[in-house]
Image (cartoon, rainbow, N blue to C red):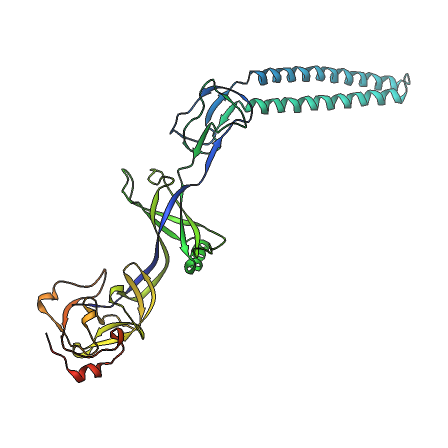
Length: 378
């Protein structure tokens, strides 16, 4: 059987879950006017920047309407200029007492009315320009162009299908679920900005690292009562496009860091009728049951209380150990090594195969009961 020493070190409590890559935004591009497509400026699968031209539509009718509106404004501006001249002449005649004040007031009203007409012409021109701008369809955000559903000569309209879809690839989000018990840790990490999340790709991409580091960006506002989990998201940089929307990844999230705690393999822990315990090699290499409490666990390791750093515990073969059994180290196995990652100096041992009595689950009887029946060294 195998012995190892309990190690005191810093321990990161992490949660592992399955996640799904999701785009931060996916925009369906549709025209705002009914027209014919004159030119397609992008290709399927192309990456575009915000504001980049995608399509040009037939806008000859709107261009003609713009010229018509501009001509109307020129006409109204000429009428306004004449009204202002009439007002100036009437004011001179009023100063010489040739006309009444009412004539001047009427001329003033004509000028103000014509000013309003010109202002309406300006608004009409702006409206036609807006309509004309719809003929140039640009990207509302950066991303990757999906399948293009139209071609030059196609007739399109606001009620028709999307012309194409732009999906944002960088940055990208990874969504996964956390157990309800870890919700306080997630909220604390989100508030402090320290929520580090790793995404492990199932297959290493052609370029870029197989493990990505991201940051927790979202925690859902409600726990799913059917599963007892809460949905969360993490944000990842994705310049090399190693994370693709819809792909599955393994997510590891660091919940907290415990400094200088006692760490043991979970395989060494015995669950008995009287609680959780481990077998410890005491004075004279006599096996004893040591009650412990599991404070945290991650992977194959657990943080426990009730042990001291350097104490030797039984790892493999503990099913054959009883309280009071004499453990004898074997020189042949001493160099084999038995501790887990960063564990203390291990030793290999075998238990005496005597018939020492034990309690339920190897933890109910004490050393005295076993010693009364004796133990034979192997």
